[in-house]
Image (cartoon, rainbow, N blue to C red; front, side, top):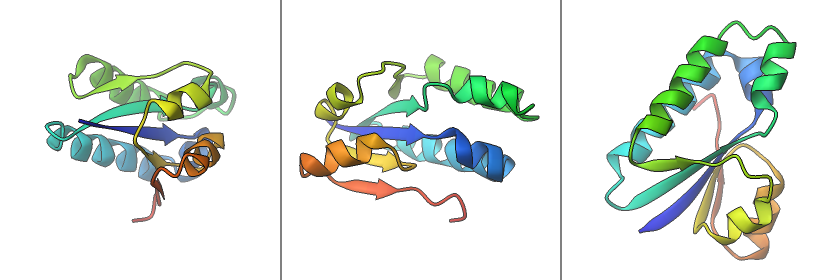
Length: 119
């Protein structure tokens, strides 16, 4: 089974708001429907909720529900570690927003796809 690192950053959430939440939800549904082939490792930006609170993010409850539903599901893992290098070493491919993990994956010659909130 392939392990897909799914990284989400706080900036799309703060700038695109509901569109970013919808994109995360759709992606998780796709990952879930393909759980017989892949295991998703969701790694949000480590200070995501902190920055959302600082910016009075009005959709915080919706975001937290998506996170909680994912944690209660069985098709992936919610990763909060700070060692992105070790995390990328354990995964087969990358999907999500730009992050340092992209460079680690590229160095390892692993596939990288950057998500587009508008698609």
